[in-house]
Image (cartoon, rainbow, N blue to C red):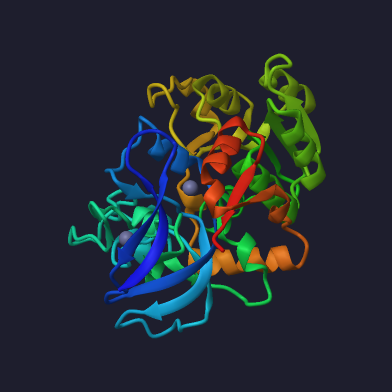
Length: 364
Ligand SMILES: [Zn+2]
Ligand SMILES: [Zn+2]
């Protein structure tokens, strides 16, 4: 049993209470991590708010990085003291997992917030608290994750920066490198230049994209996009982005990525696709979950694909992103602003307003 300090969401406000909890584990196949830092992802905000789909009380957080404190039975290839990034879990047995595509696992529910047998490993003063959010619940000093969602990383990399590789950053970079498999000279347009969109821009740069276009409302994000490799930046409130994009690339764009979840924006992203082009999105349209698609436009092999966690195999992909970072080719740390753990409310606020692209909470 370990005493931990965690941010507990007891209602639907974005205001957690910092509480001392008792953590039981690690059980078989689990790893206990002492967290160094945890990134704040939009999914945390969504789940913490009124439309949240997780039970209460719950500890959220799913971009943790830290040091292995203990391992459960059956874990043989990770040891105490290893530096790790926590990420999503997967079953290991379904056709996707067997095909090294655990991000599209058939059976794992990232939002169940209990162990698979329904038991709790977190206890508060008033009873059990839900954990295991995205295999982590890492807005805490310690967290437990299943081995398949724990990725060992090199020790010379700055551990406090690496947590966001477990979700937001690997989603944006994976969209380009794993899903689109962008080839040198091909073109990309990203709609929404937050941490996902900007990670996609950096990844496209690495892949040798011919032209990278970023669309956003915030001038500071567009400035960042330009610095990270976007060739053209477009203010979304400056007339229809699709007109501007087709002005630059009359044949259309090879790949478009939506990170806004706004139906009209997604429509534009499909409209500007070149023949054989692919539109990727990371979440369905916010209001209805639906989109009207001009099917005739898809006849020239244009494609639509939903992207989960960049369709990455984290065990391979996260160390690769760390290597890119250490080589100076993937400077995702420029998106980060650090906050002390106690300032979690402020970090949520700054993420919501867009003042900070990627807030990261430091646990000590
Ligand atoms: Zn996330
Ligand atoms: Zn699976």
